[in-house]
Image (tube, rainbow, N blue to C red; front, side, top):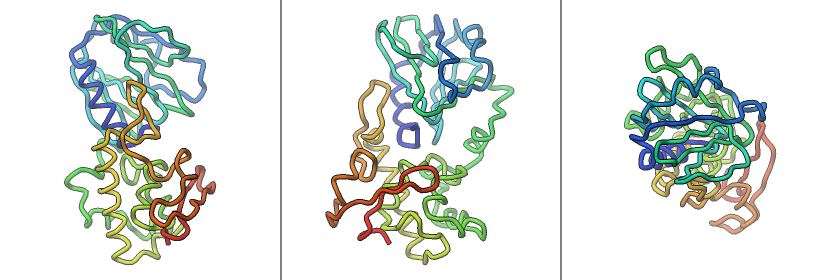
Length: 273
């Protein structure tokens, strides 16, 4: 899933590989995955984009955004974006964009994904994209401890820490994936209610958000996710499906796995309270 570390890493890679290139063909099987959602009619993408040049890559928190002259092409969630330097036989494609030098990007879906194309003048009507545009990201300078505290309200203090972090786009770019390591680094139990946190707990959670995301970005994403070349990121994820059986890296006790709020949570019963 694309969360903030992957959105940053993919944007950096795409800027290096496709910026300035002209699109000569576009295709894809738009109907073989019922959990791929489109903004705009995907059957019109080819007519709108062929002959146009990639003029920018915008670094967002949840989205990968490509500027193609007067259009914006966006991806989020389980969009697997891969770059190839030369023609390659593919098993699946939700969107395939070929450039004049014969390099191309191919997009497939894991679980579910969103692909959107819109004119930058009229903009997007997607509510999640609008939230992305109007909210402060966790690595923005404006995301201060005081700002973070404003997110704790009479309504949100009833939530668990996991729900507070990873739902409703409350904090851009944080989903269930990166939230696991944030909670571990803050030494906080995922099911604990926000209203039980004292001032130090809140500061620890804020610091863990900044510290964890910064490290993930510096290492080009998590090792549980892949970049546009199909390589895992350089950040060694502490708590995920691939790593939790190794035990707690601090106290070495068994990491617990549970289903909670529509996904898995991983935690150390000794370190996270």
